Image (cartoon, rainbow, N blue to C red; front, side, top):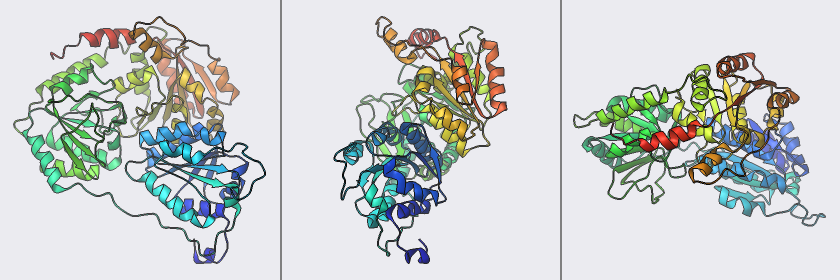
Length: 557
């Protein structure tokens, strides 16, 4: 606050919003209730834009994605009770996915209330397992300190969700005149020790078949640039986890593929052959891209924080500190080794490229996944962003869709919640209005937050929503079949998606043939506004590729 501000008495909600402004907050995604009315009035008189959502879960997904894309805390707001509980899935999504997010929930007056226990639950206790920090504010004078601490913890590595409960009477009460707002910290992440870096370099140079693995923690601009430097300087091939896609342009000649599965895919032939895996930014929260075995290959863990030791992951050496600085040091000091042999890796790459080119022009209808992925990659510009919900198609996109830049493929392989695809794409479209953004959802995941079509239309977003429709929970049906069970309990009906989109003021399209897919997508992207494209899918290729073809893979490449 300015010196003139400090001469006036401010109520708690005013101080709260001024502290958020001080943190650089631009948006609050919200489904407000009566317990938030003082806070709403303070927002009305601030520089912060209030985005009204139609469900708290979607508000949380948008806030988390804002944090993921910017590195700054995304903020969402709910009322007490059911409003707060509706934020819980988003809290888990942000914490497991390492996305900085602040949740604000209201509460009845805590000093005196005439409503008994109506709608009151212990929200702070409820949020504790899902957040890095959760507190009730019981005195307006403590708001600046609690909010600064919450934002600090949300944004420092490993990022995640935090929560503050602001009761109605604390929002309305006046703080003392000398209450002041704290400056955001300018602390820098510490760098790894030279000793640990030199040990890593020695291990890399002494290995015969080293291989780089890129995970979610590397999805930062500086890390991306450093990794390009390291790959070019050392000549070591690389692969990615699902959440590491795009950190390095996947058209790079040393890119081997994405470990969309945990075992048994083409890229695992390279992983099995490696005697050293240089893990950059992956941790065990994301579904494992491979399984370590006692006495097997060595692993170097390069990350902001130490490894969580797990039966499938127990690295022999750790380089802990700012990832970009560590990778830059290794690029400058390791160089190439005449002992390295990457010939098997390059044969794997050839096999992967040949495999991924299969059936991309297949004319069957409903359309097979290979054709869907191929045509979407053709129409999405180099800087275009796709946001994937969770379903069978996510595996196909992780394997087959090449990402050209970091954070241009937004998928979640940590909580892997359905319903996040549309809100995530909406946040990206808000932040990057000059880039093409596409939400890719299954019919099941789309319907979990489809009400946010109204929000997207109201915000005048330019957004294409692709619904890959199989009238059922496709991934679970595949698993059911794999496990030898009869098909049961996973099919349902859907609305007319074209008319459904139009009822919200969006434009709807239905693809009627494989040849119709690409021109329909191009038309939708070029028209602007909110465009929904329904694409019927034939998932029979799941069994042929993942059960039959990969089961015959012997890695004798």
